[in-house]
Length: 162
Length: 162
Image 1 (cartoon, rainbow over the protein chains, first blue to last red):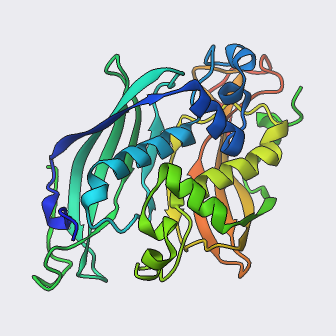
Image 2 (cartoon, rainbow over the protein chains, first blue to last red):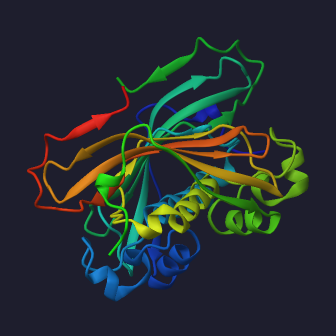
């Protein structure tokens, strides 16, 4: 039985969700498999790019965030996935050897109209580097099971950050 | 010297961008590394989920698209990455053994205001399964180098799908 259900998320909640060191090996391995651009793969080519050196793929950054959230609160939540992503902003490059921290802000919650046993939680997730600079922000509304699925009819219970 | 520059993309262009078989091994390997949810990792747990069986991670699907585009037209383009993603819709699950095809539609082009040697191309990318059903759509505006960077001052040349 997961500890966290839809009812446990409230607009305005801000929580830290772990920390991760991004290695050169990981940046290159991800790029070789999924995003083989010179700026993610090859130091010399990356030096000649806009970035002036090797940087992590933006898609890699999304995947790292997903893993950090999975190891943090999602591991103990009635998480049911998401129908998509509302926006991703790659704000600054992540370079080999950087440590990044994840921060989660709940923006809004609402019950599913079609499935009253399920609710959506709209989050802003941010990855922040050691200089306290956000390197990525991402807005997404995943679904969670409700603690008491028969508590109330859905569709009329919603709240959001003012 | 890449063949494709910003000038080669025009609103309304629709092109096929490759085909890929998604294997069970790949779905599970990706999930184990970046998105360890039971519905992506474990057949028995996945059968009990909303999906009734193992499905690919949505993030995996994004990464597969990026690889398909990299192997297709991006490999021969003055591609400079993207500042983010405008929207991702995971429309239908991808199951082990499915073959997916990529389709690219150019929605809009514009020159960068701050860097007249660079232009943005707004794309809708779609992945389509064997039943001709879209399984993912994604809107993103990557940057490309201009063929003749000194041709014209930027900011005033833009076109879009009416």
